[in-house]
Length: 289
Image 1 (cartoon, helix red, strand yellow):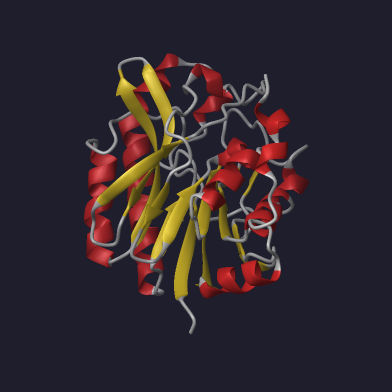
Image 2 (cartoon, one colour):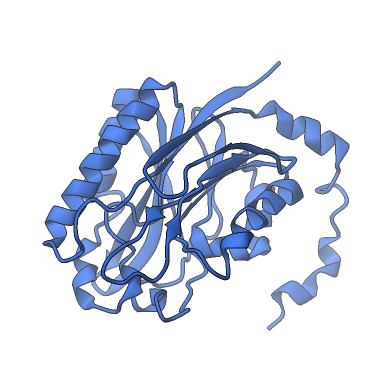
């Protein structure tokens, strides 16, 4: 018997100049995502994920302490609490990327996971932090995650999160699979250039190697004045065989929806016994200094 889940990815262009006051930017982006989430819910979505740092620009294009003012607590901050209310209102599971303050001066690139009844289930903190300047000055803003690779039991199934640059590291993707993930969401902010061809290569490979569904989200458009590259959108879902189920538009707002049959995971794993045939005792080199 099928275990159908209708899932949504929300990609959105910046709707306020980066020179605007930060509260104005944040409020405008939240309002935009609230409206898009309502549309996704009307289309039957049971789980949805926003893009990385969804309530602002990709400010890592520069190194300015003013962006620290976008941080908030998780789950006690206003964005997580608002999304808890919306999750309950729409009966939808949410993955909500937030710029998190743990303590003053200690900040994380985080995603909160909220169940369809509005309950906060926990959070994932981005594990791998790039410093690939010019344009990706993330170590200026984020401390590396310290919560491991949690998987959350939601109303729709077991959900894991990987954030943007994490996707280049197969070790964590495997940990999510071993921890029971059925759907892994990867909220991202990635631009055209050296890594664009990897966008539809690496994550279907994770889906195949670990035999789960992947929802990959990327913001679209150009962000002035930095213009570090085109955020090329093309958010997508792929299945445990690595097949694309739905792909978003490149350069504009989009809500990408796909129907996932979670029972396909058992079917694929019964055919390709990757977890059974693993040899972890031989993999010591992976964790050696």
